[in-house]
Image (cartoon, rainbow, N blue to C red):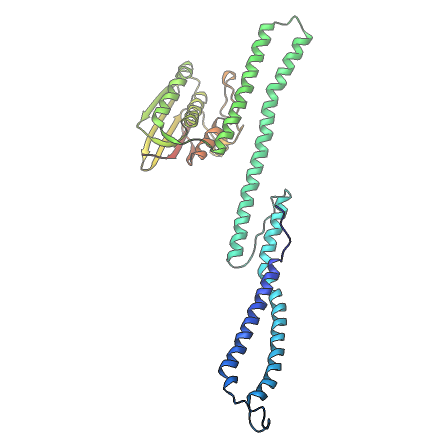
Length: 359
């Protein structure tokens, strides 16, 4: 937004210092006149050297007072300019850092030294903002690069299959169509997951009271055939746990957690337990599964987009896009909740979601 040019803050402060000094000098002269000079007898017609009088004092005092006032104004201009510059120097540092950040360099930090005051507080807040911006931009760039790579893979496979079909007309069309359908389905699933992840990050949804226990039962019923196919025991326990949020997003969150727990389980004979409960003002959802042992340093990275743990290998029929837990984390964050992932000593993972409860 363009504005008309005006005085700088330094000049305004300087003029305010000078104005204050001029006002103080005028008040001082007024006090001298009110309480001293007007009570001195006016003997301007008599002999000036006989005794002090108002005429003598005015002719000797006023010129000296005028010189003193002029000196005060000049001193105020110089001193005010210097003091204003020293006081506004931190703002200059912050402005330079803001311009640097505006040009695309988010790695610069002010790191203002000195004791804590308003300027240092503003500087620290600006540095903290730059930290968050740099982290967010790096995350978005990494996400965009990974998303481009993931979307390019099914498109490249589709082009390869079409090239083969064009060069070899005798190839079985049924097999080609089936493979194209599978690749297309994967690309559509990835696109829908990206859109859902973006929606969760924005947090622009209507909030209502949702019972997590009912959501857990619905997700378990939907995924029961997959669990039976893999001979996984799926149990839903606990009581009502009401949370405020989007029923659709919370259902996707629980479905992703249960599906991950089923797919990343033992080959046969594993278990998945979904438990809901309420602690005070917090609604808690726990999803626990058996499976391979996970390295503790690997677990925090599982919520990053397109992050796949080497220990958690999916079969081809359920090859994911690496956004399951990223979507869960995004939905939990949009609902002002907390997501905890803890590896089980015997293998598998314990996922705990804590959301603000509602009556």
